Length: 121
Image (cartoon, rainbow, N blue to C red; front, side):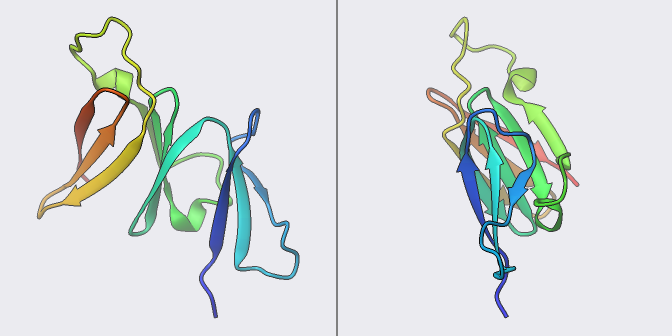
C-alpha cells in the first residue's frame, strides 16, 4: 500500500550499509546509517549522498538498503583542476540535478564553490 520510507541516520563509525528495521511489523519503514553524510538528493530512481570529504555516492533506490556498493562513487577532488584555495573545503552542502535532452547536469555546492558535473548514461 505504501512505498518504502527510509530514515537516514548520520552515525559516527557506521559501516557503509548498516540497515536496520527497528519498526518491526512495518515493512515500509527502514533505517540506514552512514558516517559523514552532509546531504542527500533523491532523483527519479536514484539517491545521491554527499559527504563531508567531497565524496559522492549514487545508489539505485531498489538497491539502497541491500547493497554496500554504490552504482557510482567519486570524489570532487578528482575533477578539480585549479581553485585559488590551496586546500579547498570540499564539504558538500547541497546537490541538485538539471536534466536536458542528452544528459544530467549535477550541481554540487561546497562551502565556497559550486561545481557542475555532466553525467551521461
